[in-house]
Image (cartoon, rainbow, N blue to C red; front, side, top):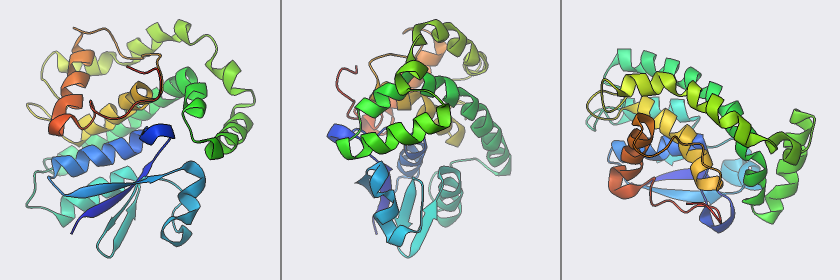
Amino acid sequence: MTIELFDLCGQGDVRFSPYCWRTKMSLAHKRLDFETVPVRFTDIPKILDGRHATLPVIQDGGHNIRDSFEIALYLEHRYPDRPSLFGGAGGIALSRFVEAWSSTLHSGIAAAVIKDIHDALQPEDQNYFRQSREQDLGRSLEDHQRGREAMLQQFHKQLLPLSRMLDKQPFTGGSSPLYPDYIVFGSLQWPQVISAFSLLPDKGTLVRDWFDRMAGLYDGLGGNAPCAEGCA
């Protein structure tokens, strides 16, 4: 049976949620058949009888699971005969650390592309997104994104732990990717598909080469994803 993934969607089939990207990569890693169901922000309360407030959510037979990490754990335990996402209990513990580290990147990413996210949403979602985010931020999306060029160097410094690790091995998982790779890839894929302002280091750097390897996995699942207008 094909698994359904409810996937956050903007204009033109742009799929930008870092958490949904973690799940897509995990499903592909497990070699599981899945199809995505595009969902706008304002339509999330309408899916599955309104039982879930955030995405991703997967529907696997009679099972509905929310939260990207919980989905990864479910897939690992439900399909033990498929390639492991964690490589054992130690990998799960490591993944929780990587998830916590990756979340420290998100405020910088959001500051750099938050107005671009708004512009890439369906018109029905734009009012919701602006009102909810500006209420949290205490200022306009335009003001929050202004001056993003100045933060790029600091953002790249935040990626130094990843770069230093990649100097020793090609993936966080070692010789091949594991769930920690998908966590960080999802975070960096998010601005890549939503904004023309690139947060990635230059080509030829360890992090950029790793990102490009990740984007090419599973027949280019990440690299061939639709992007917002003006994006590379």
